[in-house]
Image: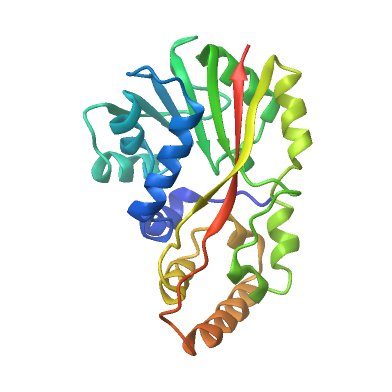
Amino acid sequence: MRRVDYDTELYQNYSRGRALTEHQLEAWTSAFAAALPDRRPLVGLDVGSGTGRFTPALARAFGPVTGVEPSVRMREQAQEQEQHPGVRYVAGSAEDMPVPSGSADYALMFLSWHHVQDKPRAVRELARVVKPAGRLLLRANFSDHHPEPWWLDHFPRGLEVDTALFQPLHEVIAMFTEAGWRVAEFGLVTHLSDGTRADMLERLRLRTLSFFAQLSADEVEAGLRSIEEAVSGDPDAPSPALSEPLLTLERR
């Protein structure tokens, strides 16, 4: 996987390009609540918190949250735009988190696992910071469980390139279970449309998905032109809902 540079340009458009509708945020928060203990407050970690698109929502729903993010610019965006009295943002990564051992009731990694460079180290670090019987909510794509959004077909190598970013599910599970975690649940979360196809095209033009960094400039331009042509016939058609995987792991 070609590394994605969030500190040069992507941080400027990330919040817009990866924006969540209220319905989407509600769907994900409900899915997280179903996977977590009923008691409140819970102490959480948002690992790879980016510009904080989930962090304040986690604090409102469950209790105090620390957003852990390696990108300086992404953290700055979060601190400026996504403030909440129960949230703090710190420099760190999945492999190295500046938080005490056993201090978190749960950790969320939302589409950040594929960015982790040293995954075995991250598994150990997550086990260090999450309490025994605590949960890891791993919203990741897997090469054998891929949502395949409608627009991906407009890039000739789209599915091949995107699935190559991710491990198969069994490989991820093996890494965690060998380090003392257990699978609590695996399922799909279906959320409502993220707007019209034209809305989605506007977000795609911002190129904030990891997928775009793996394509040549010509491939990106050709794919976006193809989407533009397809959308032009009915720009107000809703962008189809997606069912996306969520793996919940429990710390033994």
